[in-house]
Image (cartoon, rainbow, N blue to C red; front, top):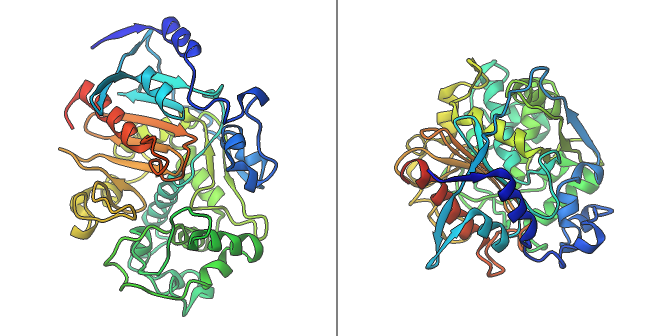
Length: 411
């Protein structure tokens, strides 16, 4: 295994220019947007994605009283990968793509980390849809403790105000699998059903927005269709079932037990103060790493189970999903069958179980339990999907991940 000194690495990283620094407003110090509309504009993205909870209302989750140590070796591992005929390093990747951070953890130790655009490990980075998996962990914990009787229950069994609605009549497990059957387009065009759903949330509230989805395209449970609205409903179910806010429940049952070192936050809808379950979580990259380490250890932290292994397998094991939701079979919104989907978690192809928390614009936590390998990746991609702009962010990130895996095992 190749390694080189940390000072040399940092010097090289400092000297190299990150992509599109001028477009992202380096000269203004990467300012934070004044509102949510500005936050996703190119010139405000870097600053906003590391300070989102200063723009909208939020609730805080306290860190652990006894944070889990993250060891750093004296030298970092040098990773390489092949992409489109070239052979590149992790430093090359940071010059090619608009990643704000990449942190690699092997066997509980940080073996490599890089940052662009002046971001640091102490900043709280926006999760976008990585939050969906965190909500699922909260639901599974509620199931373990008996607050939810069965994932075959319907949302309206816990949220009576959803009785008679499409989402209310859908089983919790099908909401978690993105298989409500609702006719819903989420393509990040700014004019899709997701944009309209969020607009109703911000004007009338989360419950009212959920009640407004009325048209079914497929029977529930049969067809994958990615829609953040389903996670918003799951957030309502979790709060109703536990009689606690999403912030309080996740903070108590997941965040502190993983040994988080810093406070995290959830953005709140200004109208009803309901947490933005589908994508409003914020945490440091080191604490995202601790979350990934818990997942890689099948739910165990320092000998204590944060979440049961069986429930994690239900969320992340391809063999436990219907055939139509497994890698190679499931058709996503981009027409690809690369990923599968478990319970609010993306399932990756390969020789063994490997899965990911993914969020738009480049947010990701990759978890390989067999190799005890976690990769945290944050970014400010040119477009929400990662590849539509032609710079192949998602494709090159996948190539980097394969190179990291190759250092320790096989894909």
